[in-house]
Length: 393
Image (cartoon, rainbow, N blue to C red; front, side):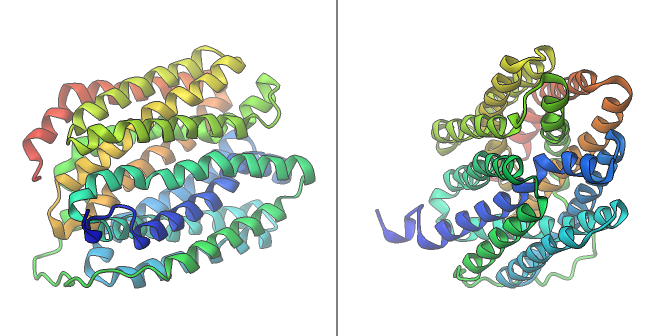
């Protein structure tokens, strides 16, 4: 094979490593923040949801503009600046001495997170040979999948050994700093910057032709937002599973990694709709299992099933967005799927907390399953046909 057609080239490996560092530092804190807010500031369930919701709001707002920014300005500079501020904000958690200040820091942290995930994933597409792009996009998510497998377990081990969140905040910052260093060494191919004179329109910031895909991704993400945010405190308070979130995310990631590795054959063959169809069905079963079996079997079994489903669904969807976009809209395509995911996760965090506060965790998890099922039904009734009509490649 020609060296220029190599999938695992040096720059792609660096981008994958940077992606791992982004999500390792992110996931090091995410499962434990509800416990931190409850124990440190005596925050109620709906207050926890509101505090964590702000992060998702600013991340999605930033991602709306990030796609246009990475298509219009030097991507390496955009990535470096956003990575730098993503790293810097971890120090703010240490300095926050009140619930209000913590909420402000957490919310503002969403902006660089939104920007760095868009710029890094777009750079990944740039450094891939065109003949291996579909396959490479499928593998790209392995970085955050592996991070999600390791990071929560590390965080929970540190927490239960020390009960010191300051250690976790510093560890997250140092991990992000390592990712920043790796990202700064990536060499990008020269490209002509987009300098079009068209009037500003929504399509510059969001891939409007992919609206039905965006809607379904939002519904799937809602379910993930509810479960991933409240599973640690739910397991601790209602199932008596102390530190179970670590094993949950490990099994989730085993499912994600297994599914991505075995499903890449379908992606290479261009069978995106088929791969997504399998994924959305399996995921819906996983969320039902989590809600309907309030015990360790349901808790851990659902993690594996949801991982198997999302590992098929997400890379297929990401390729769909890219295939519906012009070459000059790669950043916009990437930001669109991430914005949709952010909207869903944010709504899941916020509304999941409200439902859990007033109706209990079981009701919140049934709502998560119902919303996921609605997304799956809409995919089969409309979205898969919409893609066949609108795809450009």
